[in-house]
Length: 234
Image 1 (tube, rainbow, N blue to C red):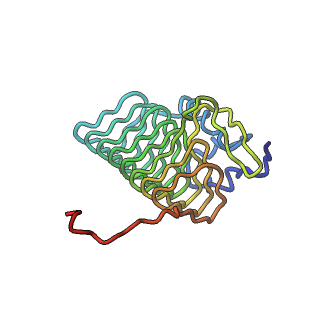
Image 2: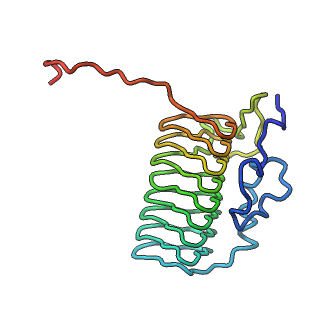
Image 3: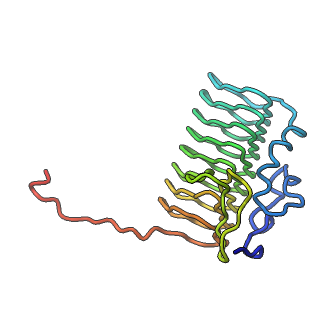
C-alpha cells in the first residue's frame, strides 16, 4: 500500500539555494532518486583541482576538487570522484569515497565516513559517523557516533515506510534524507530509507525507521535504574 502524498518532496526538505548542485534535484520522481544521479553528475561536472590545503599524510586519489579555504588534516583519505566546497574541514581519519559532494562550510571530522552522499552547506558530521547513500540538508548536525544505515540485513531493495504503508525505493542502498537544520543525537541510528523533516531533533540513542514530519522531537523513553550501592558491591 502506498500514497505519494505521504512523501516529502525535495523543496519540503531542503533549501536548494544552499547547494551549488541544485540541478541534481530537477524532475525527480521521488526525492531519493537523487542518489543514483551523483555518479553521472560528478563525471560530467567535476573538474579536479586543489585550492585548499592538504596536510601531512592525507591521501587524495582519483578525481577530487577541493575548494578555497578547505583544510584536509593528516590521515584523511579522499578517493574520488569527490567534490568538496569552500572553507571546510576534513578531519584526521575521515574517509570520503565513491561519489561524494560536500558543500561550503562543512565539517567531516575524525573517523567519519561518507559514501555516495550529498551534504548541503553548513553540515557538521563531526566524529565517528557513517553517512552512506544519503542527503543532509543545510546545517544538519550529527552527534558523535550517529549512523545512517544504508543496507538491509535481509537483502533486497530498501523500503520507505510511509503512514499508508511501505514503498519500494528501487534502491538496494539508501540511507537517509535529512531536512535542513535537523539535529541527530549521539549514537542514534537511522535505518535504511529514513526521511527526516526540517527542524527536527532526535535525542541520543534513538533507533528510527520511516518518515518524520518537520519540527518533531523524538526521545527514547528508557529509564535508568539507580539503586543504593551496597557493601557487597564494593
